Image 1 (tube, rainbow, N blue to C red):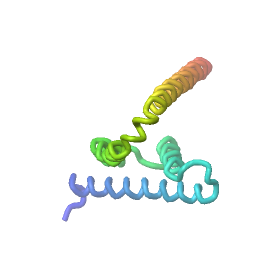
Image 2: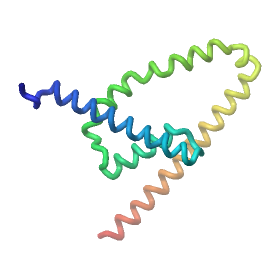
Image 3: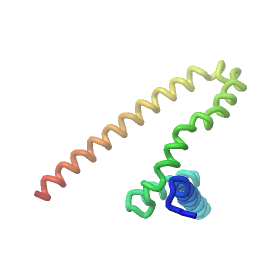
Length: 132
């Protein structure tokens, strides 16, 4: 039996992704138990991002699984949509405030991310000019 087939490669990459994501989430829960400032899943995402950035986690092995997760992400939003439909009364009372807060926080987030991106680009240009 040959193990270097597309099927076994896909299974290996799926297991690699499962172990990497689970490990990061488990570490996130450990950090959350010690320092409960943000949710454990956010700690896990930060660990995953750092692991990918420093090549501790192989992004190529995770690509197929991540693409599959993104493709099926809409399923994750179905419970939220059902919850909204079940609480229409609350939305009728506080809908304007909720929509206003959503719009304002989205604009603030876009401005902050835009400024941080521009800062990063300027810093990268200065760094690259100094290397030549």
